[in-house]
Image (cartoon, rainbow, N blue to C red; front, side, top):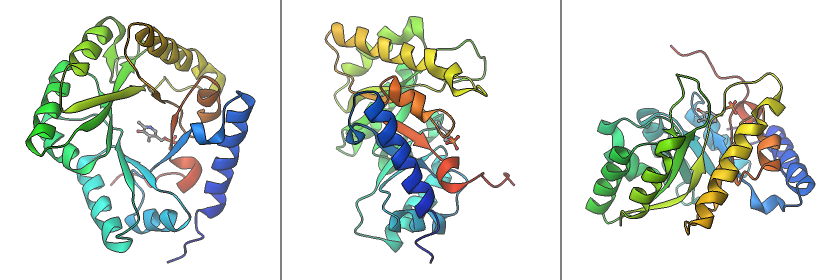
Length: 236
Ligand SMILES: *Cc1c(COP(=O)(O)O)cnc(C)c1O
């Protein structure tokens, strides 16, 4: 196994994260890099672990389960942190709770309650983010702004989940500056929740094309796939 395969890409992404953080008057340690491994072969994920990565994001339960198992076998004692970043179907919640440290995509009261139920059943306190839909696009998941406060209040009242912050996926823009207003909106929504007594330290926003802009707007977690692993192989 060539542990060097992604080393240069990872180094470059960390360098860009550090620069963006410092330009924003923040420290590099204020931003966590989640390497998005959807569509990436398990042996490549192991290679990335040997290059120093510890946090990974998957958007499908089945694919994630395989990869988490493979990595545990290969590098058993490395303490890895797995993020679920995709749309979560109800029949996959139990698995998601078993497998993932942070679920980024809670966008309904129903889903929050189901996660709470399954977490309670295995004695886990499940860390989650609330995914917020800030654009008009039909295709995007996420709670609508007008339903956000209700979801936040309900989720905060559930004893087996812990709401750590917010996540959003802006529409695609050629120019990353196009995403800035959405990143800013998420931060302002968080600040507003803060002022109402909710503590939501984590902002999961920014991908390969726009993570520097997201960091400038306060991202604490960036989800980066292509810039580390290259273009994804086409789906079968
Ligand atoms: C695929 C994906 C990413 C990573 O996208 P890249 O452009 O490859 O960095 C980030 N977040 C989510 C939710 C994704 O599905």
